[in-house]
Amino acid sequence: MWVLKEVNSSGDSEEWNMIDTLRSCSGKSIDHQWRKTFDNILYTTNGILTQTLWEDQQDQDKHPEVTNQLSKISYCNVKKVLGASQTNMSTLERYYNASEKHVLRQINELEPQVIIFGGTYDILEPGLNIMHYKSVMENDLPWYYSQDQIILNARHPQSTSGTRQKYCDNIIKAVINWKNMNG
Image (cartoon, rainbow, N blue to C red; front, side, top):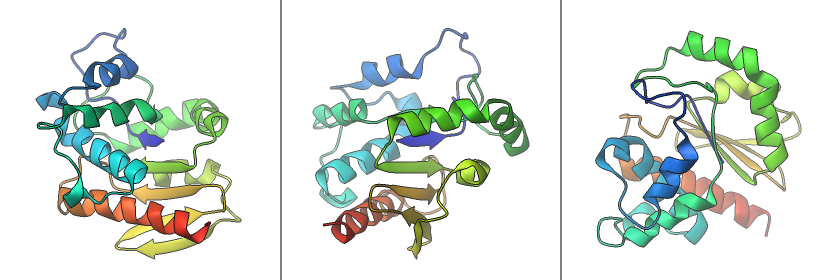
């Protein structure tokens, strides 16, 4: 499960739906306007599911079937209304506080094994029940785990801090390490 901030879609109508957008990407290369965020989501997700690091993955432009992996993830935005390319974190926190139970219910009902918070962990952390989780800091990526679940406090997938390969591989390696710890 990916937990992100808001949809960068300020010009769209309220009828817009992320599920429809993800379905439209399946089996073909991701549209250029979505690549800054969804390339990292795609290659991280694919790497987790196939236990393949970024460098060894197939390029979606040559192998568009790799985008089918997007249909295997859950996706939750903290802010449930359309946003813009820059997120005002205090506004995001207000939206979360107004819909906290809804966001946490989405996460808890799905019971995901892997939760990747893309720049949203600090806002949701007080509502998460992780006091019995162990914590790890690895490659500047904090993560928390139990036998059944790993929670990653990652930057937003569109972050320009570091390379795409480092972003994806740090998350992939953490999930592989967690899986190896739990046999």
